[in-house]
Length: 479
Image (cartoon, rainbow, N blue to C red; front, side):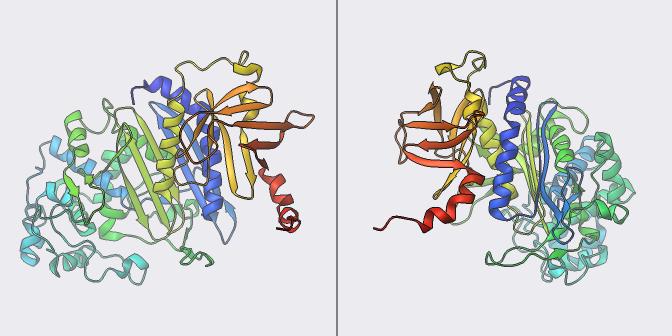
């Protein structure tokens, strides 16, 4: 996107109430216990919100300060620490992992030959989690260093080096041991000092912290067939796998960490290292699926004009996602506290809505003299009928018609223009909906919308429709 960060931040601040409203709707519709989210543009935190509950058992309200297990986000922290050591000349990307973890040479020589670079890019062919990885469903503790070496030795080399992209938690855990060997300190202590503390991330750490147990959002089981009752999942220590999956954080802290990876940002890494992390190191191709790419510790994605980098996280009870646009200086982070939490869908939806807002005019028309003689803001709202929910949203200085229940809220949107005090006109484009037709409003004495006809079909404020829905369907006319 070409919009300067300062201007983009202004647009995002104005759009933030709608972004939060859309998140709230999605959370309720998908029955997610809690959603914590943050958006940072340039040096401004434009949204930091928490919706729903931290714990279904207690009913405690979720706050922006609740801690989440961010799981594989840990890989980006680990990769950052490795690149810092490379910059300092203390480690080389082409070092075999066996050079730093001698025990793996004796137990798993094929794994020992895999380089640091190959592990960072998941090109080492190393087993993902081992032959027995039921620690992921809490049937046993996560492996300690000795057990990790057992996992690497027992069928640890699945593919040849650089044969396929093969995601490996075991590989990243070995990188954690390498960091310990290089620095002479624990993985946790090193990344805390050199990554977390450098950015002042007060609510981020490399492993479960029992001293802060009361601050963590509870994890919850998934809805296997949509009808289950969610159960609370306890937090556990990930031990020797912390470099792959141990970190905790908040959405706000993750946007600060993401901003440290902006082009031109100082504090963690030089520009060459940041470019290296973001460069497509691995191609992810299987069957006829769309090709994806992975860098060094970062997932890569193209969304419209944006080239995004970041990571997801899947921990028992928490699903999380952060996307970063390093050039446009935007970070979106969404954390959910259920095994089936739609964090990635929500994060991508926030980016889509932000881009829709940024597609508005450079200088929105002033509210005092709007087109059509009526204030556009009065038309905005969420309305419902038998077919679902529709939003009229004010984004980027103009009105748009959106379907907030869709995973991509921007798909099928229509631009709206004000024709008069009670009427909007949908843009004239091809489509299956009511493009080119009017949106007509009825108001109460206080000027609040009581009924909206969109292309001729009536909708009402959500609570009004909910109250009248049963009577409406029961008195349906005979066919």
